[in-house]
Each structure stands twice: as C-alpha cells, then as structure tokens.
Length: 348
Image (cartoon, rainbow, N blue to C red):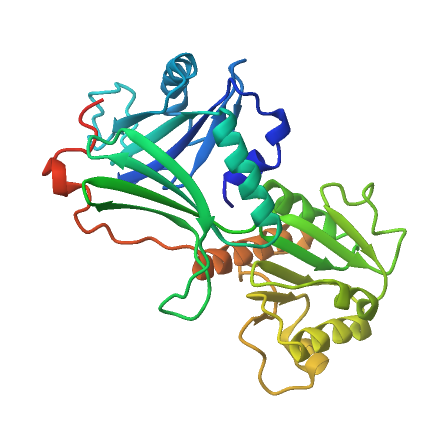
C-alpha cells in the first residue's frame, strides 16, 4: 500500500535533519510509481524505498546537500538505455524517474501532522506542490480531495503532474489508511494478520473468544474487539476504505455478520467469506450475491493451508484496492510543452 503511512505513523521519530524523497514523475517503466516516498535520516538509516536499491545510494548524497542547504531539490535518473551507459550497472529499467528531495523542516512536519489528522478522520486528501517552469520548488499546500469521478463517487489515489500558466503542479492524492476488519481470531487468522501488517493495513480483529483475540496471539493488530457480532457491528463505522474478512468458522455468527452488512448497505468494496460459495448462499438465503461480496474468498491459486490461503486473500484484496482506488492518468504531452522531446530536468 502507500509508502506514506509508515512515515505518518512514525512522525515523532523523524528528526528535522531528515529528508523526504518523493517520486514526482515517471516516463516509461520503473520499480515504483509517482507518489512513492521515503525518508533519509541523518544517521544514514532509511525509512522506505523508491527502487530495488538502484537509486537510494546516490539519492543519499543529494539528501546530504539538501540537509545542508535547507532547500528542496529535484533529481532525475535516466535509465531508458538497457545498456545503461550512464550508470554502468545494467539497471535497464527503461524509464526516467524524477525525485523531489525536501528537508523535513517544521513546515513539512506540520503539514504531515495535519495530513495524518485528516486521514484519521477518514478524509481523502491531496498534497499540492508547485514548481516554476524550470521545475524549481515554489510552494506546497494540503487540501481535501474528495470529488466525483466518471465511474461513481469512489475516490482515487495516485499522483499526477499538470502544467498550467508557466507552472507545474504535482498533485499527490492520499487515501485514509485502509482497514482490514477480520471477524474470527482462530489459528488461521495469524498469517493473514502478519501479511496485512507488512502492507500497512490498520487491522481490527473481532471475536467473542477473549482467549484467542489477544495481542499475544495476534501481534500487529491495532484493535481487538471482544464480543458477539451483533454487539460489535453497530460500533464500527464501515467506510469504502475498509476491507472485511469473515472467518469465524461458525455458521450462525457468519450469518449474523453478513446479514447485518447486507441489510445496512455496507460501503466496503470487499467482503470476503471463508468457505465454499454454496455455504455463502445458505448464509444469506439469496439467489444472487452482492457485487462487493467475494465467495469463495481469495484468488484462485490452488491455495492449501492457512498461509497459502492468506496469500490468496491478500492478493485479492490488493487487486480490489487498486481497481477501485488507483488511477494512472495518461500523460498528454505535459512534459513536452517547455522542453520538446528532452527530459524535463535534463541529463543527470
């Protein structure tokens, strides 16, 4: 999921001497796309990554310069040539990558605090950075980005670069941190929690069995809700950014959960139900399942056992997440308005 979540969740540990690096544009292919970001700390440690370790070492030297001068800087990397004569490392990623480096000063820190507060309130936000026609940093601001799309009212994530009135505007859209709400705290829940935690989901586990639903049994969970489904469900405000997995292994409890979610028109884009599809039909007593209900749960990869099934579930959730919330806007010559066919920032 988005690289920005671990940064936002560790703001108190990020010092003012740190440097934020963000991919602002990609021409061609690259390991990671626009909006990907990471932190370079003064002690040479890093939070996150922008490539398969192809760029980080060189970027770290630029980060030293940004830290020293206290002003943002843009760096470009041209890896279009498979022979990679520029780098001499045979990277051959077939893309040009543009990275903005910003000192993590009080201004940036305060903006990130405001961003985190807004995301915690389940708001969809946009970070806008303005550059002049020479792509020198001018200003940044944060604002709400909830808007209507051509499809329905689903908000999107990603980043775009636009050119207007002799200025470039880089818009980085950030969604609230996705939540994974799991009903069931049995032994097969742990590998699912482990995978989701690595992907920066905010995880809630709901189960009436207090001896199972513990932090010791399920490390990485943000909230343990103890109680029967009808006691817990009214307390959860389910949004379109929430993914739900039903795996209590109890027919009656699963029936209560699904009946409630369908009756209350859950906004969740994903409700996955463990077990065969015929069982799910019986649970709801319907002839057609809702479009947001996935049964049997997980991508069909022939998974066997709890770990493999967890992989198939997470893979399906990632697929649904990107389908509903990601976008890749076609570039229509934005970068060519001023520089003809040359790279925006010239050769590195």
